[in-house]
Length: 209
Image (cartoon, rainbow, N blue to C red):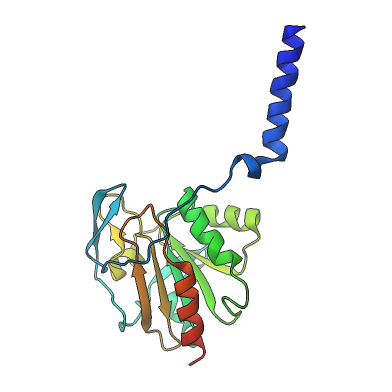
């Protein structure tokens, strides 16, 4: 009798996880940072300093014409977005809760928050296959996913590459129709989220110019 009850209890718990996984996997509170550091300086990860290497960019600079790879393995250049306002969000890896939440906020933004003519771009050093899986799971096909996995060219050309981890820092940048970086937030502590709402607001303002 005890064995039957135990098996029934375990089965019930398993079904609960399967059917109500979202309830069991509630999103923890992730701090949102309004602060920023400069490219090519220092960020922290759980309090440990991480040096950013490469050629640092700043507001007012032209976005480098880096060649990246999209989720279906096609080479893409950042030059192709000229003529459009672009919101670029960078993160270490989609396979972490914080990066996934960052991407979710980008994907969930309504047309009022981010009008359709503003290009939403996510850049990490994940393999393109991870992007394909994520897009299928979430339905966020309106995000342009670009991978810097080959040689970290984007990270090096922007000063956003963490030297020892070889991953990108967490950042948001808004690029205007002329390819000029008009807004850049690099989150000082990698375990915090960037201020997505501020980035959306600035993107709308620049897009209306």
